[in-house]
Image 1 (cartoon, rainbow, N blue to C red):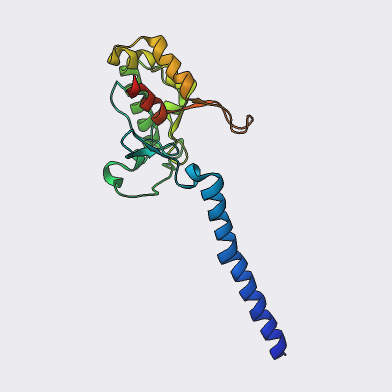
Image 2 (cartoon, one colour):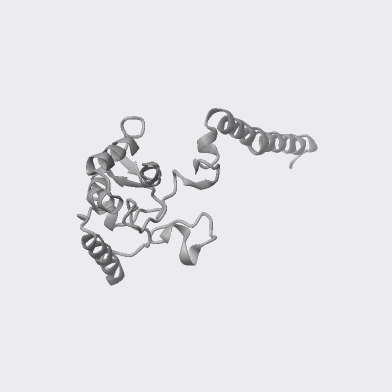
Length: 192
């Protein structure tokens, strides 16, 4: 049988654990984020020269014009169109390799790229698991140089230098592959 003393001890232990996990720990994480890594803690938001938010370096955006580098395909259209206004919308199509809709989607992307004289690469044809990936491979960016340079009347070498400037290395020097953040690249392109 539980004594009053044991019951009191259980209540105190629960309250102390609640204070540690629901109050102290979140406050420490909040302070760490705001003092040590405020840019990342606040969504890695990118602002223009007027101070207006134009995007996040963590979330892809659709670019359709020939004057811009195109992002990778997305099953959710980066929260535009039907999903406009929905925040946090993320996810893959979950279509099996044998699904005819997946084959149609892939073929559509390949055709679109070929019509624009872009050599299709995996990351321009296939969607990412989250549907929000802001990066493309260096090869995918290089395959778009001529289209962008022609549309903007720029020297292709100048555009290639921008790709090198926008290239992000491996995480911690080990994980992943070097890649290009499309939003940052297009912002630099607009500055020319």
